[in-house]
Image 1 (cartoon, rainbow, N blue to C red):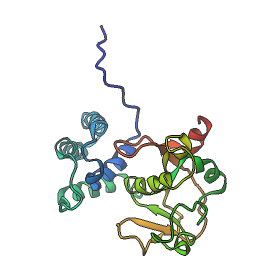
Image 2 (cartoon, rainbow, N blue to C red; image 1 turned 45 degrees about the horizontal axis):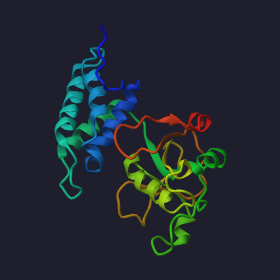
Image 3 (cartoon, rainbow, N blue to C red; image 1 turned 135 degrees about the vertical axis):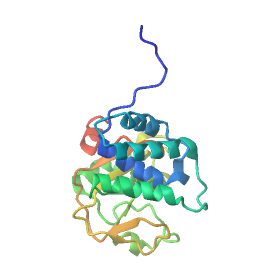
Image 4 (tube, rainbow, N blue to C red; image 1 turned 90 degrees about the vertical axis):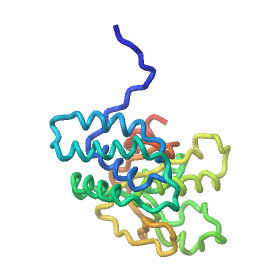
Length: 228
């Protein structure tokens, strides 16, 4: 007899994606530190995977313990030194994999897939917040998908159309950082804000649509557009 637990199955996630997301979650507990149920289910499976080394399984077990007991952390709390060490261990495990993230809305995804990201194309910022000349000078990214959520939300708020409609749904684009001429955004006060001075072609773009917390399941942009 099969007993229905009422818990939906977790889609298969490549191991490198699990480690990458654990790094992001360890480094950003103030944003959604109380939403780690999927992380824990995937981590528990990894901890019991005897194909992994004992050391890595112990590290993942400690990460799971932190997620299980952490909850949401106040942004002004001092950073936990141990979480930084664990994030560094996981980063070493996956090597040089590195991504950057761009917040936008669903309406603009098709144009971005065709033309890439173009400085100043989407005018969602007003001059009293950021000078127009700065917005038009570059394409802007963050080093964490969670930090890109706020920019996607700004695009949602300042775009025309029904707020509840799909075209205005916040979306995050993920791109490999390799080959991008990234530099710090000097006008940004938050860490991890980056920019590229010029158009950016979308190479292997993946997206999440309408998600602002929890475990992200990245889908190829072409697949998302094909099923819209």
